[in-house]
Length: 492
Image 1 (cartoon, rainbow, N blue to C red):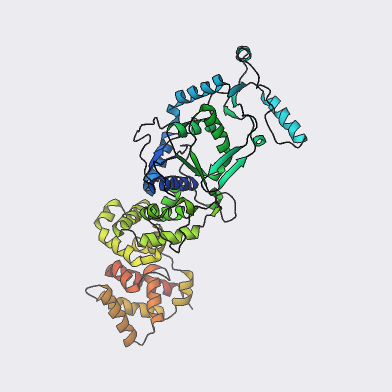
Image 2: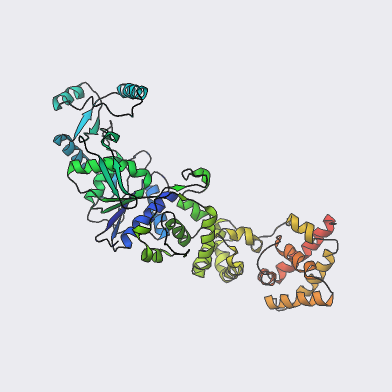
């Protein structure tokens, strides 16, 4: 499907951080536009004045930029269709509301909450779906003036056209038909005078000449109402594409109970942007081949709307970690090193100055971890012994490798390594093999106890490499400490 002159938009509400599902929507808006040489608009829907903040707006934009999702127009860039914050577009909404009221396509509704609740109760009793009964449909402007003088609050409702169903032409799902009786005279202006999402979102999409509205399937029920508003205003109706909902493994909508849900949380947990983008794309899109790994540029070049799915996507944390492990190993090593150093500083395992002074050393530590790093933060669990001393040894390792004879073997290793110069990976390798050969010691009595003594762990990168990176002084000190610990604790 070749599309031309495409304009999409991502329209977050700055009432919180960028949700994983919203990031998914942002990515597909970007892909639809960029795959066809189109433009992306960032619009901030900040009409919730009590909860919207510029700080959330800034953080959302920062997370989008981290993912690599850019835009051509927005509050930070300007453009031909601004302003790009809805809070700055109230005069536009007021003008459109007045048009609807003047034309008779909308009307003021003065029904009280009590009246509406009574109507709802009666319809429920009759097993009818709730529809506004139209009590205020035929009020005249003179009636409005009289009720206004009495101080009666009102909302504004759209006068639903008689008869015909509304068809939503969805680019993923095909035609979705909403029968006439499925839509009533819905409210699009609240009693405080603020327009709802139904009006602001639709009007902005049309006036900003958005050609394709790409959003989650939870908005499907809003779409026929927005089409009716645009038809009543005589404004162009964009094409709609509703992406698949993202569920947790328990098949419920993704939420905090499933773990991290905001992009910033995944960043803090050590996930890298290429992995996040790769994973987000597969939640609703399938390349129709066996490929697993796509960079953002590769996604743009391979994306097609025809490959989008309408079926719910299941969020799989293990799958995300798998992709992250791949992208850590296949991203510029200096970029990964910067991320590791940032984490080590935040974890107070190094200082900014010590990280700068020992950058090459930290680079070598990251290198010997190889593909063990599934997240950047794994450096702490897997290699904290490089940056701090420890007092505990892995309990299973103690039981299996710290025996009554182990102090004697460790003291032998200590003496040998103390005399080793230069203290290199190759030198440690040769020295330990010489000990095993000359003293007829099996590897199990040398390699495993030594790893436990040096790291406190039973698994990890190559022993000879990590010993060399620890350095002679630290390695000898830990071997001596472990031998004393074993003697003091009387292992069997």
